[in-house]
Length: 148
Image 1 (cartoon, one colour):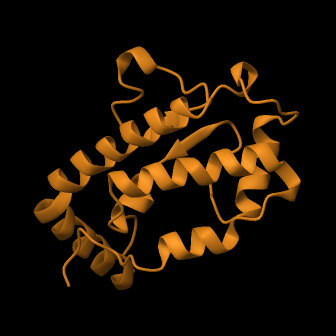
Image 2 (cartoon, rainbow, N blue to C red):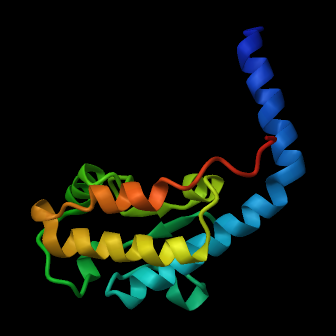
């Protein structure tokens, strides 16, 4: 904090208090979700890096589109754009994170479903339309790991 913007101080205090109480459980679930999503994507033909190490030790997965077994003509930035059009947000260099969806309360079964949707988008590319399926997956979740 560089100055006294009280709304920022209050928000930081709330976030720190929540992480003190819920942080360990949130971190464990975030990593577990990333590992399950990594395996589910790998099982669907995605070259998720670091398979031999359990795919990740953090919230993040790395995809190498150059080694993708599914036929495609996308660069990583193109894949990010196609996924974003379908309400699945990644970054432009092939990283997928699980921190936000874990904060929403998603767990292992939702990672399997998310992998299915990502694979469907990659197969159908610009023709893909999983927006409603993503909405249905998301609709029953609210922020967890926080004070109610």
